[in-house]
Image 1: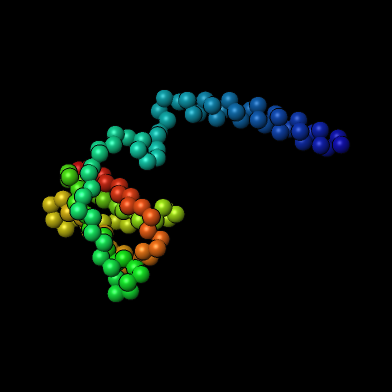
Image 2: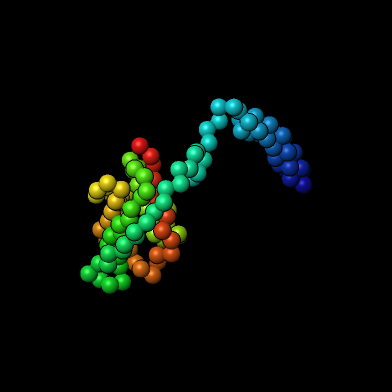
Length: 119
């Protein structure tokens, strides 16, 4: 019982020390923001989306689309459960192409998420 009281007192002491430190660090004016959409969002419009099937009809090997403004880097994700984005190649003017070498299962495709970075 005595050890339990000591442990409880230590946890309270630790919380009382760490909370103000965390609050101070979080409120620092030079704190960096991160995450999707933390900066100005350009509002690109994506159009003319085309999926190219693989030799296996259950897979897609490529997706291509147009943006309405220039971009220096574009990535796409087709599966909301995945965290991996596939880099795309600019193949002409505002037209982009994203290749999936191993293919991506059509049954897992439940979104079309594009991240573009301006020039």
